[in-house]
Length: 77
Image: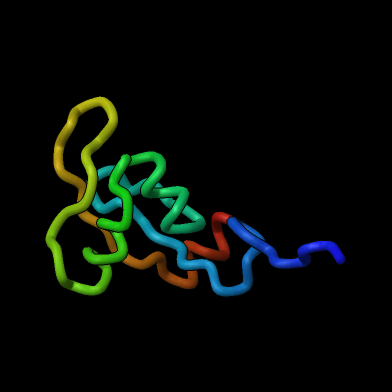
């Protein structure tokens, strides 16, 4: 009947990431890629295939990414 699939911040298998350049926390890779206009690039950085993904919206510097720690996830709920 209705789609009960949860997406975004409430999804059970979300992947929280942090931009190393700015320290900004994102609940999902999608949220981060929308901010940095990087498409699937963040996924490839996290897997070690690429070094950077996207550019800072204001400074245009290449962005580095890492998985968020459990501590950061709890802090940013």
